[in-house]
Structures are given as structure tokens and as C-alpha cells.
Image (cartoon, rainbow, N blue to C red):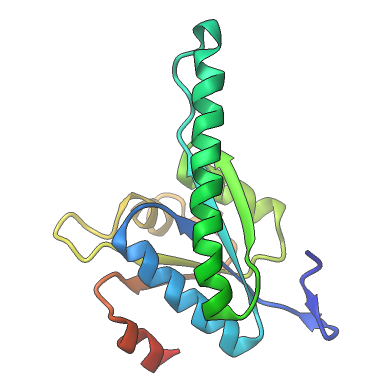
Amino acid sequence: MSGEAGGHHQRVFLVVVDSSPEMKVALRFACRRARATGGRLAMLYVTEPAAAEWLGVGEIMREERRAEAETRLQELAVDVREMSGDVPVLYVREGDPADELLRLLAEEPTISVLVLGADPGPKGPGPLIAALSGRLIGKLHVPMTIVPGSMTSAEIDAVT
């Protein structure tokens, strides 16, 4: 991806994919912003590292997790194309979500905005937001938009 559209820098909105309801809220917000600004959406799915390494079990587990990640991203890509008007960029990484996110941001200068959904529950916004707005804030080099996970589609549409 060149990051260029019509001779100017194209905004790329990155959403970290997980199974939480607030991720869907962040995804809708990012898609609407990308569409409104002529930008593009990217999605990152981080899998857990395989623990068992004997007799090839670890490699089988790694392959299964990667296949699950790719399937999930392809399913979401259909929705993203409908909402944003463009095909998203897809990334699959293995490891700690915060570490892999920071590594991707360092490797991909075209990513210009990180969009995360905050858990509206009493336990707090979620571990990734907590880490990135706390101890890792100095390592983040793009703006982070935190979307309240309790927002409805109509509320998102009204602000985007």
C-alpha cells in the first residue's frame, strides 16, 4: 500500500480485532471516518503464541490460530468494504497484543490513526487501552481514538 491517494497522504485507520463487542463499535467508527476523509481501514489480529512445542503440536496450534485469524479478518473485511467503500489492509501477528501493535506501527508509517473500543463495564476500558494510555504511551507515535463501547450505531453515525 503506498499511502498516497491523488498525490496526498491517505489516512489509514487501524483497528485491533478481537472478540469483544466494543471492537465492533470501534470498527464502525473507523470505517465511517475512513469513508468521510477518503482514508482506508486496516485491521490487526494478534494471536497467542503456541505453548506446546513437542512433536509439532506447537506448530499445528500456531497454524490453526492463524487460520482462525485469517477467517475472522476476511469475514470482517466484507463489512468493512460495505461501510468504508474500500478493501481493508489485513495484518496477522503472533505475540503480546500491545507489543505487536507497537511493532506494526513502527513498521508501517502509512498507519496514521489507531482506533480502539473501550469496554463500558466496571473493570475498565480493557488491557490494551490501559497499557497504551499508561506505561506505553511514550511509545505510541500516532493519535489514539478511544470509542466508548456503549455507543450505538446511530450515535456513531451522528458524530462521523
